[in-house]
Image (cartoon, rainbow, N blue to C red; front, side, top):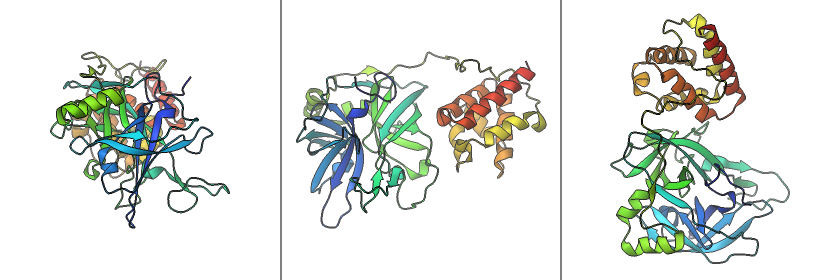
Amino acid sequence: MSERTGGAGGPEIARIAEVIVGRGGGVPGRRGSGYRVTDRYVLTAAHLVEPPLTTLRVRFDADRSSEWTTGAQVVLRSGPADLALLELTGTPPEAPPVHHAPRYAVIPETAVTLPVTAVGFPRFKLREDSGPDDRRAEGPRGRYRDSCHVDGTVSALSNRRAGSLEVAVPPPAEDVEPDRSPWEGMSGAPLWSDGAIIGLITTHHRSDGLGRLAAMRVQRWYELLAPAELELLGTRAGLPAAPGPAALPGPGAPHQQPPNQPSLDALPHTLTLSELRDLVDALTALPTLRRPNGLDSVLEGIDPRVAAHRPRDDRLRFEVYGVLRTCLRYPGTLDRFMAELRTWEEDSEELRKVDRVAAELAMRHN
């Protein structure tokens, strides 16, 4: 049985590809991400394999016992769609077979926010390894690029003019290279929702901040590719003549609280700082909120009235208090704020403390 990430029907670990491009002539090579959609073919971003290139390799399961690497050639490259299909030129015996192509889906133009996931190899995952038997060469001996599995959300109506998807993700903790994006190398990673590919990550716009990526929609492939290119993707990558829609939440579907976690919707809007102190202290300890612009990134996932009307302060503690007081003015938004934090934090110890404190607060005012 194949290992998977993101649950059944999501990306399979053994099929996640690292695309390594050599350009020669002293020109720096490129690193990117991709996915083995069928036995001999890998989807990735077109700009990664833009000519000239001297070598093209694809690696799977780097530095694991199941690692394998092979050469590849470009069989389809569309600049407008920023989509490429690579054909593997060799499949060694250790390469596991691919028994099925992924499912593809489009997002209807509806005012919904969908959970998404992606796995790739961004630049901020560069690591140093002082081990004596290092086979992971990215520049100097001892450097390698690890994988990054991110969960985030897509708001379906964003970036309509560009034809892309705006992907809200937890930002890297630091941005230490002003001339290089920390997300460089994530391009080419498929974006998954409900077990289907809905897009391909292609760009990080600096102006959007560190918590936003852009992905080309699957729908745009059908609009931008020539009939012969679509036919090629159909026969070699499993792209259907017309994909089905991604699963959407029902209209007005209420947010589901985690088990045993009471709603904060009934808290009075008159709570003072002394009454909210424990919750404020727990929230300001969250790594997500301590990052630059972390609070702004979280607020983009909830009711826009909160971001518009909350007071501003240079001190995080008072910023968080202002957000709580603002949420209490708009029913349901505090629960959505907590839900968005759970998406960003996953299951950190700091988040568990927030949940404990929030439950105690809700019980006191029940």
